[in-house]
Image 1 (cartoon, rainbow, N blue to C red):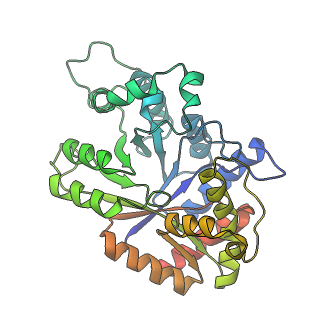
Image 2 (image 1 turned 180 degrees about the horizontal axis):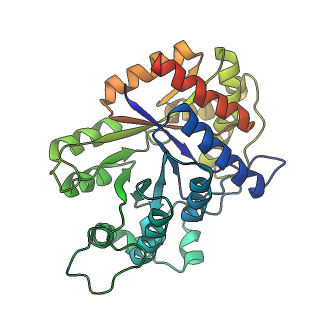
Length: 327
C-alpha cells in the first residue's frame, strides 16, 4: 500500500482565532498518528488570515509534544525567506526534542505575495537565485562536512530527512541532481506534475542518503459517509481556492451545500482545473480515485491536504480515508 501522510496549514476558521487553530493542529496530528499516517507536515505561509503556520518550526514543536511516533516536518520551509544557518539551528533543535522524527521539505517560493520580501527584509528574487547553494549548505551542516568552520548548535550532524518540494520543473531537476526525495504540490498546482516526475526519475543521481528516486504527491482528499456530505465539507477549501485565485484572503468559511452550482463560469472552470488532484466522496469513491492517481504517478507516498470548517470533520475524514485505502 502507498504510504499516506498529512499536510496541514493550521487553518484559522471564521469565528475563531490562532489560539484555536494551534489547539486543533495538535489534535489533528494526534488523530493522524492514531490512524497510522506516516508524516504530519506544516507548510510555511505568510500574511494570510486563514493560515497560521508561518512560524513553522515553532508549530512543529507544539505538534511534536502532542504526538509520539509520527514523523513531523515542514512541507515546507521557503528557504529564500531564511538564513540556512538559522534553519539548521531550528531543525537541529527539533531533532534534539524529537529524535529521528524530523523532516525538512525545502521550497523556493516565498509563501506569500511580493510584499513579504519587505516585511522579512529580504531580496527574495536574489535569494531565490542562491537556492541550490543554500540547500547544499544545509546538507553540509547536517552531514558534518569537515570543510565547515562555523558549526550550528543544535544542527550540526542532526538526523534530518531532507526533501525537495516543487510545483514546477526546477525542483524536480534539483532534487534529481542532489539525490533527494521529491514532493510535488499537485493539490494546488497540478499543471507540471507528470513532466516533473518524469524529469526527476530520468535524471536522478543516487546520493549517500537515497539510492533510488522517491516520490510523494499531494492530493486534496475528503472522505465522508456519502458523496454529498463529502462535497459539502470540501466546499470550505474550495471557497479559499476561489478567494486566493481572485486576489483575496479570508478565514476558512462555513461549508456551502452545492457550492459549485453557485459559482460563475470562470470560477468553476478555475476550480475544476486546480482541483484535478482530488478525491471527494464516500470511502469507495475515494479509494478508487486515490488508486487511479497513484497508478498514474507511481507515487511512493501520498500526502493528503484539505482544510475543513469543522475540525472534527477533517479528523473523521482522515480516519475514513485510511480505512478505505487499507481495506
